[in-house]
Length: 310
Length: 310
Image (cartoon, rainbow over all chains, first blue to last red; front, side, top):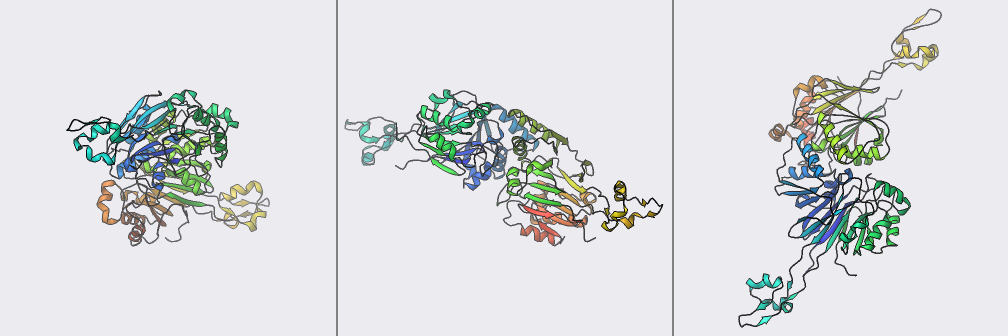
């Protein structure tokens, strides 16, 4: 069976000040063709168009915090969905105050959305299950920033076992779901065939964790342990660690330290300060601590693979 | 004397739904090197960068109304000015509710601007003098839209007369301002030299009027009469005049009719519906009524010339 899609597209990788071809933060997560948007900086609808994404398919939008570079594109996107005739419900998850910001702006523009907008106020508490649908579960991370800021762990839901093609003819249709769920098969003649003879292991539950914006926060380690892909902000190099502490951002060294301590599969860096013309300096600093590290970039596509190392 | 600059740059010429390479509304007006921003749709700071404009030099921002495609880029621009260390006061002129929208978003992001932000709530009344500085006066236009929407007439302030170079040696330094202001010159020996012998006419007071968004509104005619350049929205062609009426927008035919009736110098069309791949159709419709018409486009630069026709 072909692996189903679990893929991250980074649409904007800059810090608060857009410059040097970097845009404010926004990410698209595709899990089994269901689309989830993570943060929505100014211009996100334009970035989605450039990336060739049909944003009408987005079902859930997660907003980490209310600094402008993480949410100022939301109203424009909601409006465009409205103008394009969206009917399907949209779920927005974010800090409680975001609801006020949306409501006020809808009110002053005299806009009544044609589709249902469901808002979920997120608590600032690691481990809380924020939502689940048929594809994923989403748990929260209490990040450490100047305003309440929430990270997210997206995890594929446990999948059914795969039926072996060479045994399909043995399994009556009405028993297939039970066998996929791990039951043994009792034939009409009384013979019992063990489940392990009929099925192969389910696809692994891949996972992606999003940590931006945040100061270095070791308390996150148990909550992101062993995730397949960790996106962690790396606004500065270690030479500016003091500035990182003051502004409650992280250095590339700190991001890599967290990735190493949590034994993640792969680390993806982003939220680069506009002072860095190239982010290579940040990559070099991180790789020295945690080799399986990459830089995110505008339009970058990163498939999330199950762990190959332990 | 070289003519001083009076120049409009159209940064975004699309209607509510950004598409086809058009961006939401924003315009930069340069009068004698002072910069004024008119509307500020999502992504305006990016458009200003692309146009090579140093947006820190903008002193006044005018917001016509609170539909998202005319103001959603404001918070990002204010924030970037802050992050880039702006100290100079910024003046924002717009509907009263805009102040609430700004204040709420500053509050939830925990931001305190490092520069003074002066807000002026605009009344919805044609002819009101909204501001004047050393370069221009700005009067308001009560446009006709689904929410209160204000247009603007920017007019150069009356300029001093020019001293004739061949007569400069006759005029003592301490009398030059008086002569520029039209006074005759009395020499020490009692001779009086008429002002007309010493000066030439001042530069003409050029004018630019901005009308977007609005339904066709003949009541505007006396307020935009004889302006050198009129920007008027032309969301639809006349075949969709019913749709224009419902949404309180204008057709190209209507924009041209207003321009003709007000005897303006030149008409510039914009705010094109995303249904038009090319705006040529809108131009053809307008030119049949008012020949001195152009299409605005992203990054288009339009010097405002004094009238050559009457």
